[in-house]
Image (cartoon, rainbow, N blue to C red; front, side, top):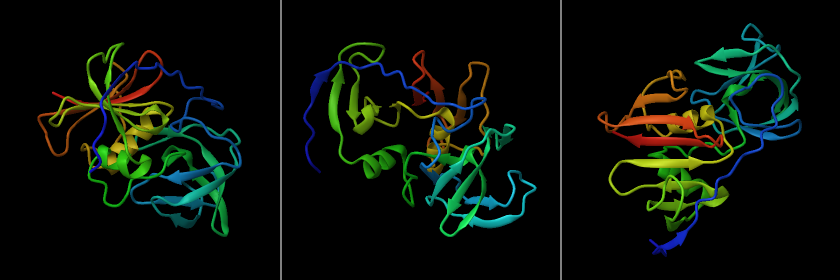
Length: 222
């Protein structure tokens, strides 16, 4: 493994710009013509109407990509705790409607995905080891990946994952696919955070939340 050079850097506070339509949905932002990735573990149903009552055209597997044809505003629906909309997409030679709460602009985790660190390395490549010199994380070691993603740890099983420009729901789906926690429903507590026991270390808790700048963070700690 290539040795990483340790440097001292400043933690830049990034304020993502989100392009939402209608009410807030799960995916952070996207537009017509974009290609999105399916993040549903058991696949995503393509239907002939924008509803769970629509006839199933086909099932789109995890990791497959769809092209957004139209994101006309529809009534918000909630599936497995995730809010979203029905949008028209194309998949291979088929067209129809899918629930966008299980779509993302990010790549899906590899099969199998052992951990979030595994996902980051296989998706974004090598990282650079740094020491943060300011802000709430001053003095912490961090592995910096592309897109200013920071994986902060002092060793052991605890870490903070600082992931700009994605929603909490997207972080939940990636964490779930990477077997970081148990549970099948995205629910928020009184502090507007998702919490669940760590799958491999039940004494540790997973917490997904957004900081004051709207950046999504996943914390694994006691």
